[in-house]
Image (cartoon, rainbow, N blue to C red; front, side, top):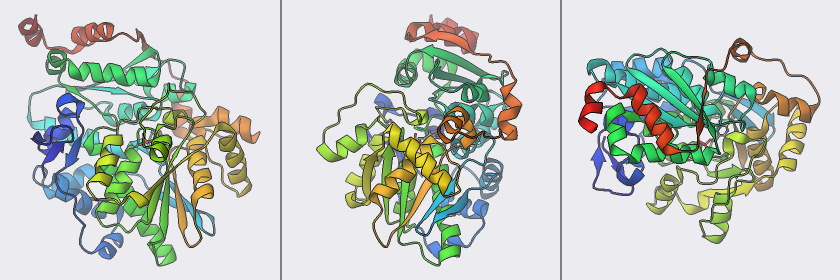
Length: 440
Ligand SMILES: *Cc1c(COP(=O)(O)O)cnc(C)c1O
């Protein structure tokens, strides 16, 4: 299938180009040329995760990856489960944190890494992945690409604005993974990434590629766990047409993937976009005005984003009629509500973390009678150990993945919020000598 640039619909690229390029002209996002309902949803739901996911993904990637290549990629990428756990009579959590870095971004990150490895295996080109993270993307990307050949990874993150454990999960690997601690906010980091893509000379010299949630491969991968949740709930309940997904949102990649799942025929009733105080989208849905405020730091720091970069795709899904406007609402949850809800969940016997807590609280405010709520558990509570322990007043054990890296040394270099400094560093480290000469 072809993918087109939402800003320049004439620019059409193949799946492999869309994955390698990340963004189109003028930083336009790629979108699949056709999104049509899949046949036999019930049959799909009866399949195991990997087989079902191959069937969902094949129409998007099928021309460039053989059936067996796709199966190999999906098998390696989705080598851990997505689990639905009951919370109450009309509510369940979809736990997406059973992968190697304990967050849902493992699904997209690992699928993207495996796709890129398949595409670069034959060619002699080198790729530099440049991505910004407010926490979990960094870990997922770093682990997904660690040790792959001909692919270097550079991760920017806001210094001092993520937890120490989060930082340790992606800054201690070394090898082909470099990390830069930026003196600025996450939005500043995103801007540095955008500036790099805008710099044609830099981008071609180092084979620039983005691995954050703007990459279409990550979104396609994320569609698969909405089907997995529906499959589990269908088995348990015998129906799914009353499902309301509450999605803790930062860059709105997760919501985009859910909407794509619905557009592909999964009978999800509707979505609630749950944000923290970085509430650009809830205010926009109320007022029709897009007025981002400066980003504020919250407990759910992976959602501290005031200019969500996937929003144009959400808008396109609605404006093009793929998703009806009534199937999206939004809620803003403040810090106190987030804490109270963590305590409430703990009272129900479920230890959660701030992002899922925001989503659960939004369900409580917005779920109607006759609906069944599913909130996304986007990270393992131990990734937010300090916060969860201080709110609940009880110690949390570290799972093995975190215990292993907690004792390792952080290998990051400091960087000012200054594009020319980043450019010099990238050109020096990754540009091939030939390209350097030609460019100077
Ligand atoms: C990235 C992240 C989010 C936000 O997801 P988006 O797709 O950017 O909206 C929510 N929770 C956690 C734990 C995350 O890491």
